[in-house]
Image 1 (tube, rainbow over the protein chains, first blue to last red):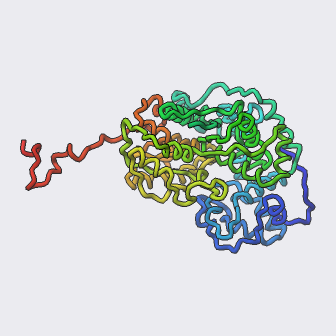
Image 2 (image 1 turned 135 degrees about the vertical axis):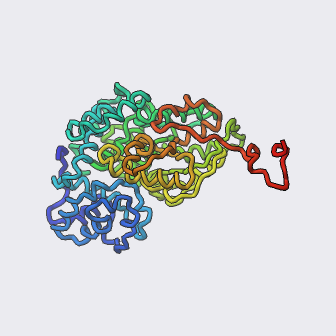
Image 3 (image 1 turned 30 degrees about the vertical axis):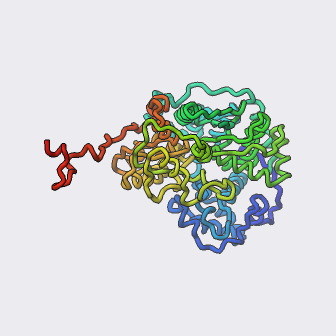
Length: 193
Length: 304
């Protein structure tokens, strides 16, 4: 999407190959016991349970690769590490999920229902890119601008936060802001995730 | 005892009572916290979701600054920050090529000499000191120790406690006079970073946690993570609506519970900043209950 990444791979590589190159995780190890799906707190909300998603990647077929990248599953994953803690084959699924999310964005395949979630992540990073630290009010404003439907969300919670001193009106200005900004610029240029 | 200190963004804003209570406890127990100069955000969930390189570089800058300041151990109270820092450190230490790539990105050398400690690790060290810690007001409450997902996982990376049934917070709670309950949700995710973007899912996950803790008789939920606190405390009204019932169960940072046991003023611990009021039922001491006196063994009070 807005981030430009160079591709270090040719188009004939399967998603499983890319997962291996970028995360050192071999999806071939998985024997489909589905412990990950049993323990996943959000499996019931996903379009494919974690083990099903992994199966699609195992197949190594272009249409299934695309379905995996278009799934809502990759965006709902909370990275809570339950699956990895319980996997008998020690597949680090959270690392794979991170890669699939990034690849999904790169190919412009992100699930439409993930819009809010992605908008939030981007608003968060915008704040850090510009200020070096998270500025909560600024981030919320950025998120609402990216996702106008959320304009009225939390208008009752925000004042309660404010009266309790939990919302700072002004950002903390760290000295190394420009250094942090540089890290963002270079990371975008560097490409490879 | 001395620790390097990385507060992280939340502790300056929405979770400032975690910072306040940690400092209050540190003052009481003579712990010196040396903040990493000019630290930046760790990138949190957003960075590792969108860019692997950023998710490594932002924590690397923090750790490189800590190294430069000569800090060998850095306490990271926020468990989300802790996770990002320890994961990045782990990956960078293992992969030399990646390490030099990231060092170039941050224009600082990352060596990996600064260790990362979570709040439970640091407090366990403090409470293991030989000199006795004086409890002015033992925290005699039934508590549900909620570790959340990131403090004890991945086991190979954090190398601390047990990934499914951790014990360190339970042990600390016992030391301050509390009684930890047995319950199944110690490490079940609260919904984490979906607080704003998918509040509905947070209500579902956090609702289950609060409901179970309360049904099992807990008088307080003890947490060690600003995200957990935001979901379990700040989102309480939404959770109650979702669950169709009300819950009075307060959510305390572990440093607040310890602070109360040390007799530190509630305001200094930031209890007033919570959305769910921190109130406990009046303690009924067994000897103050004449109604329970056994027939045939009349106590003096019963004879009056």
